[in-house]
Image 1: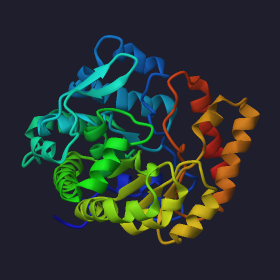
Image 2 (image 1 turned 120 degrees about the horizontal axis):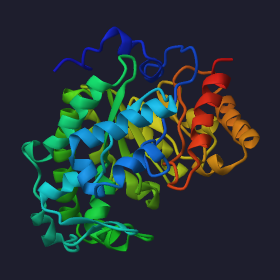
Image 3 (image 1 turned 180 degrees about the vertical axis):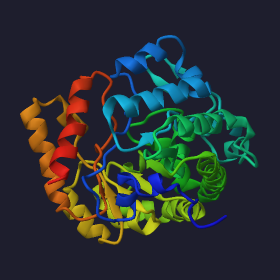
Image 4 (image 1 turned 30 degrees about the horizontal axis):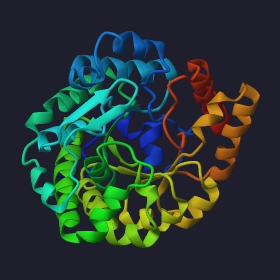
Length: 352
């Protein structure tokens, strides 16, 4: 496989891809985590007809909500409508999305011996609906709008498998890490092997870049991250980055930023818990940075929202390689007009 897929001229020269390569752009590009979501009436019109899993597994519908969100908002990249967890189903995880509760895993891996139930996937046939959606979305998007794929990072997926859902303290996850490092290594290895195939297949099907979400790694101390997570995340990124740029997004703990950089990636994704200027200093200026406005800023009155967006842009100091985003996803009860306003504000202020 050549290093990075050959892009059309329009995609290569798109605002987003130029920023990934840290080249000058006409204005700061942005996309928004969870840009296709419950806050958008266009999304709800589709979602009300099917369950969440049906939406994820029906390529035509996943395509519709992905493309519509990009069009309605005017963002500079589309992100595949999918979820972090369905890749775990064919590996042996019994997954259900409960109304009001989110994902629940009915057969969590609580002890070392349970890890044998989780099988690494040798082929991606069982999740082919994802790649069908990617091909449809790519052909439906404008020629200059990149499509981002994504997956959960190994630690975040491992935590879901072990905890059985969300967690405040990650007691089961950390207990396995500390008490049974052999089982932990086996679990993380199977996840890395599977997710690397999964992301490479998304790129092959038509994604221009991929984001790896380590949404839960913030619960770890730097020494635990270094010992139990870094080697696996690094191996995953190294396997994928030869095919397309990787956005390494880690949230919840700015003390992990030096290790996030060590794990690798073309773009470092930031949450809002650190000033963007300080974060970029820590990373060094040889990577692009994505972020990092607090998503709750979108509830602010528009003049305040404008100032908060300006603060992030000012922290980036017009350095090439900044992709504007929120520090996490849009909330479900957000006024869509505020999200549209943010896109206009960033494009206006970013061009000055």
